[in-house]
Length: 202
Image (cartoon, rainbow, N blue to C red; front, side):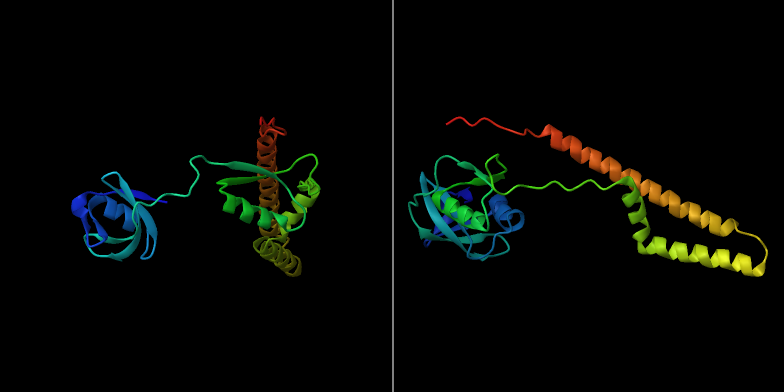
């Protein structure tokens, strides 16, 4: 919960009137809306406030509870949760949040029933063929066939244009396969950098 500091002169009729940089921070940076809650500290006392209204120069924070005592834990709890079966993860997250856990990280463990399967590597031949499934490439293929057929029908023997189109299509496919291979190698390198196991001290 956001906490702002105010002076006694900012307090009037059970409301705090925040101006200046804090006003700009609440309205433009945090984009808080009417009804949102925050803490306001004044003279060693923290009050739970609710945004009542905005004006061009100030924001009115109505005091909902004076001398508010936060129920949040003084420390952050990080939970590394093994992958559960079925849809139990949602229930685990719900209960852990209710207990005050601030961060939950799913972890694949040796005894987990659920395993994260890595994608099977696709062969270079299949990648190369997949490059020709693009709509623009198909149009170029059609243009190449039409140009070749026109050259045969007219009997001119001028096949430079279809050859150039075909060369461009093949070059585009080669570049696409090369870029995909580099991206996959980069992902594999990142995967190797991640620790496969960790020791937890209790």
